[in-house]
Length: 490
Image (cartoon, rainbow, N blue to C red):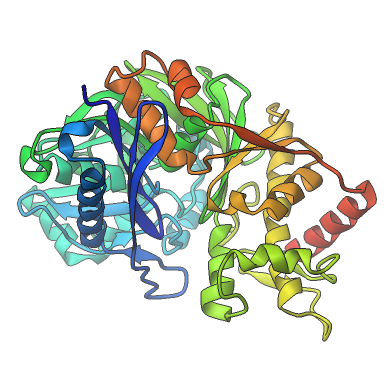
């Protein structure tokens, strides 16, 4: 009987298809880079057509690698959250470039809504802040500035959705227009205790409800692929935003358990159970998962720039040839030589929420070289995480340990630096791509391969490695003082 799980893992810089066995083994993987468009400072765009074409091609190759579609029982889908796609339901084609979660073009709109006094109510209802990070103001921008989007709305054929909505619509050949609750909770348009998108919030942001998808569970019988795509119809039984999927993939299934994913950005989530999450320290409340209409929530801290800082060092500054070089460079010197990096290349996220902040490299001297800058860039990951830890603790959600994952977590130096700066045990799974694994776990439960997420985690998660703190408190304090001094200058 087929029990393999095909996962679409839709990242910011690439799309991947991964096939997992029911015991969590990775059987096949296919990956394609996505083109990044930067038409203006602070703007980030994708081609939604490219996302679809490369996702489909990767899925077909991965299926072929495991012996064909008859081995596939179900599909799980996980995606870069907050990125907005507008498409024409009559043609199935995108109407404009997708606006990526990192994009800051609606900062002025958010500032205007704040000035009008709307943020307290929006935060109370959605768990979010009025920031261009989230999807709602991006949707309004497309309606206001892209003629094709406005025309489609007038014609009654406009669809606005995040990446999972777009891909599910394409996979089902238009039969399913849905958004899972975890992704929907990132739009500014869903009340945390509301079943569907909220009319009042839609009116506030100027987003037509008629163009929005139906909100559904994160696991269960969610949709089905068009038979023509793969040779048989495959049920889509798991769907979650990438950070929620990683939280599930890390087995953070009980209240209080916490994970941090270091990918393009850095995202920390603490499971809050069924209680509505509230923060007094500018953290976010979000839906972690939903099953049979019942929601599990999380508190989240979102940092916009993590791995993308290392990519910038490589592609824009040219001081490293590969991301992996940063570990050797960091180890080659005893400290950063007084260099501190504030990685605000697309503003500052939690807990600072400064949309207009820009990056800073402080403390440069003639003694500063590529090793010092590379080490300071890695140190910035721990500094940002320490700020988040303080905010979580102030909200009554202090971390007892931290589970890390994502591409950057494979860097042993950075993992140890996190433990040192947090003064906390840090745990890293042997299989660090827990975003895709979480989507596979959701789909496995949704399809009945495993009876519960607890049993899915027991069957599919592998071993872990522990990093214990071993840094002098004085050194830690000096580094944090330099970080806060540089932070005050942005």
